[in-house]
Amino acid sequence: MLKDVVEVRAGTPYRLHLVFEDGVAGDVDLAELVPFTGVFEPLQDPGFFRQARVDADLGTVVWPNGADLDPDVLYASVSGEAIDVDSATTTGRRSYTADPGDPAASSVAEAADLSTWVGQDPKDRPGRGEGKR
Image 1 (cartoon, one colour):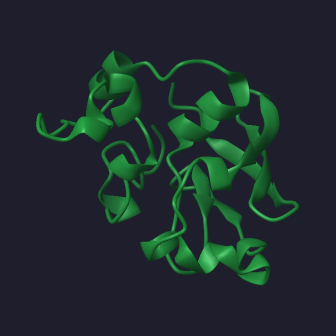
Image 2 (cartoon, rainbow, N blue to C red):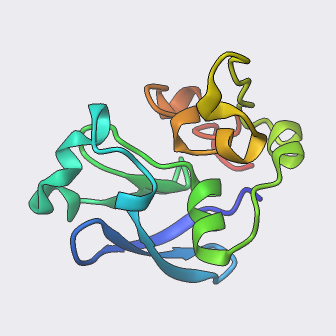
């Protein structure tokens, strides 16, 4: 997919209005996408949540504490398109390998979520933070 977020507006608690580089636009409810723990815990505070902004180098939404969101997951949420796991792997995105003993990651669809990026420095992500693609 690799569609960058170019605009974000924080709305009612946990909702973001997003615009992508191809003109696709819509709202996402982060309460349905991420657990508000760890780096995402401060987002529970409406004032902090409203500090969402687009990092043009990363092509996604970020907050001052370093929390950010996978733009592929956001695009899929807004557009209704499924995440193409094969494309994500061939375009340099970090692939997710589920622990076979983890029942929560029993399918590729379940594994392709925001948790694949939690705790990873955004600048270390393949295909991001490297200037123009």
